[in-house]
Amino acid sequence: MTKLPILFEDAEALVIDKLAGLPIDPPRAGGTSLENYLDALRLGFQRLPLAVHRLDQDTSGCLLLARNAKAHRRFAAAFEARQVEKVYLGVVAGPVAEDEGTISLNLSKISSAEKGWRMIPARAGKPAVTHWRVVTRKEGMTLVEFRPETGRTHQIRIHALAGLGAALLGDPVYGSGEGARRTMLHAAALTVPREGKAPIAATAPLPADFAALGFSCPPTI
Image (tube, rainbow, N blue to C red; front, side, top):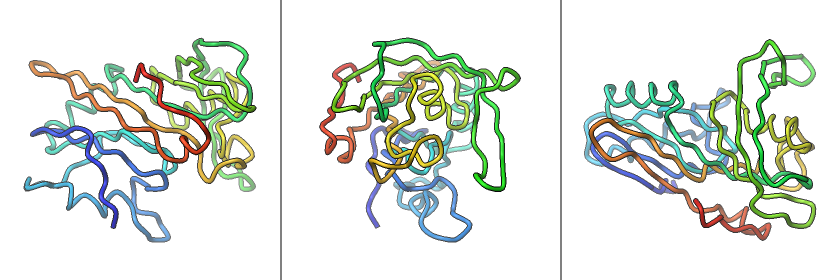
């Protein structure tokens, strides 16, 4: 089994570079998930590390794990209070006219027998705010840096479609699913403030499938 790269490590936290395609929770049908890696990520500690937040199965990059329950509660509270800085890179499957902006669209979950569940913009939904800027435009695709203020399910994916006019490349729910083997979204950087000590700060290298499309990581990350 491939080892998960460790991007940050200290006595109370790990940040790993999650592989695209690796689910956080064990699939109902069986198969490998983050759970299969936790024992190896103990690294001499007695307790198994616990994921503090979630990334979609297709999303690669920075995932924070807590090494004890007390740290988990503190880190989860930081996410809830919007104190965590998150930077994502996504390939939008189309041109983006503006260079930067902010998308503020409330989101709500819907479900149907034909399409399953998904998120939609809805006035009565939960507030969701994403700041974005174009990094590179290339052959009908756009590499965009996303900095979400909130952490709603599928927030960047639906904000790309509804706010920028095109879904992420490869997204089978909000787009055509074509052009890539997975939804092209990467958690590029994560910063978690901590009282009385240096923040947790990690950067995940750009995955090979982004590079294969001709994109590179922006110098600001």
